[in-house]
Amino acid sequence: MPVFSPSVETLITELSKMPGIGRKSAQRIAFHLLKISKVEALSLATAIENVRERVSLCSVCFNITESDPCPICKDENRDQTVLCIVERPSDVMAVEKTGRFKGRFHVLGGAFAPLQGIGPDELRIDELLARLDGQVKEIILATNPNTEGEATATFLAKLMQPLGLTVTRLAQGLPIGSDLDLADEVTLTRAIEGRVEIK
Ligand SMILES: [Zn+2]
View 1 (tube, rainbow, N blue to C red):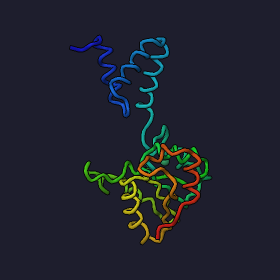
View 2: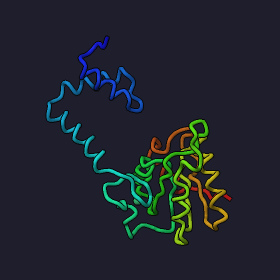
View 3: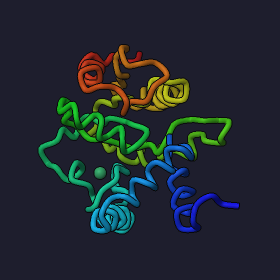
View 4: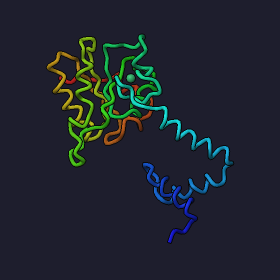
C-alpha cells in the first residue's frame, strides 16, 4: 500500500525517473514542492510544459533550439570552416561556456554503445557527412573522454581523414571516464586550445 496520498505518490514516482534522482531525493523534492507557494509550483510546471512545447532540435546541427536553424547555425560571424562534433546538446553548452570556440557544432545524439545496440546507424553520422560541403576544413572530435566516446572518435577519424579534412581530438587533461559537460571551463578551454591532430 502506498505510504503517501495518491497524488504525492505519483509525483514521487515521476521525479524518481529523473537521472540521478533516487526515491529518497524524489521524496525530498516532492515535499519541497508541497511547501512552496502555489505560484512557484505552477511556474515550474509551466516551465516544463514550455520546454516540451517550444524546444526542438535544430535541423542542421541537432542542438536543442526554439528557432530552426538554431542561433549558432544562423550566426554568419561564426567560423564555417571548423565543426565541433559532440555527443549531446549539453556538450554544446559546455563548449559554448568556455567562449573560446567560434566554429559550429554537430550533435551526434550519443556515442557507440554496442551493448545497447547503438552503432553508427543510430548516430547522426550520415547527417554529418552531408554537411561536409567543402567549406569545412577541420573537424574537432569532442566526444566524451570515456570508452564509448573514444571508440566513436576513432571511427569518425577513420571516416573523415580520407576526405582531406584535418581531424583533431580534444587534448588530454579532461577527467578520463567522465562526461564533457562535467568538465570545468578552464580544463575544457585548455582541451580545446591544445587539441591535437589525429594522423
Ligand atoms: Zn544548429
